Image (cartoon, rainbow, N blue to C red; front, side, top):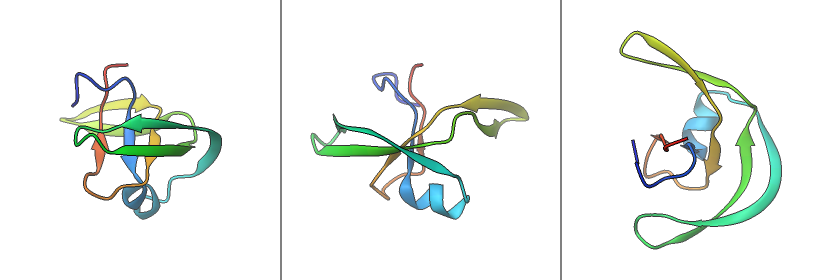
Length: 76
């Protein structure tokens, strides 16, 4: 969980391995913790369902073109 992140993100690697469908969006840039700028061009189709400690959640995820992580949960 990243309390300074305004959105939820999923790595492109995880998105592909989980078989999640995406749509293209109007691209925009974000700056990650390492001060690297990344361009966001896709989001998972609305309402990805996921589980944590026997609880089921549903959230939207933007796709990051980075494979250094799996999922970043923002403070939406």
